[in-house]
Length: 74
Image (cartoon, rainbow, N blue to C red; front, top):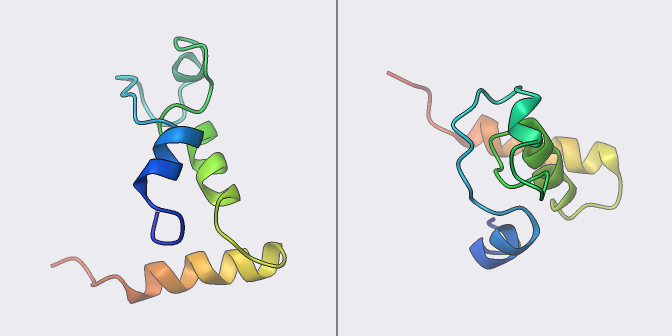
């Protein structure tokens, strides 16, 4: 989202709530467009594919760096 913006995420993945657990098979079947939510496994995979990088290792390091920069929970 930081690299491509909210509209790109909404266009490629969507923001539809499924009401199911993140790893629910049903969550990928109840809405025809499989990756409709970035917090469902298929949407998370699509989200990662949108991280701009030269290779998988660079993509992983960018994601890891993002989480490393997040403040620790209280």
